Image (cartoon, rainbow, N blue to C red; front, side, top):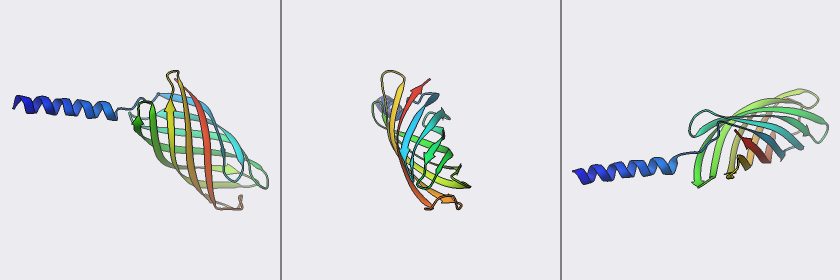
Length: 151
């Protein structure tokens, strides 16, 4: 019985350590991507737990017919792949303007690497469904590279 208890304790401790995340409380940086047009966003992440966070992005977009801005909020869940490498998925939405105001719903899937220094690099794919007449296409596929300082 003692051996079973000891093995159970070791197993629980091991699975807790393996699935533990090392998410910074806050991260801020740039998200550079391309959807209907090239754009740069100021990106802020705030940890909400050990494996989830909120990301807020505000930036400029060079859409095909005119320039505009976009504000996005995404709730994300993180899962470890290896030491310092995570993948994440999330959902959210936001609003923007390109001649007229539009709303959008978005998903998010990406991979990130945490350096030994407080730096985070990530690559993500964010499909968006746009509601409004501002954009020519109601479906956007935003792919972006991000670099953030963690604190």
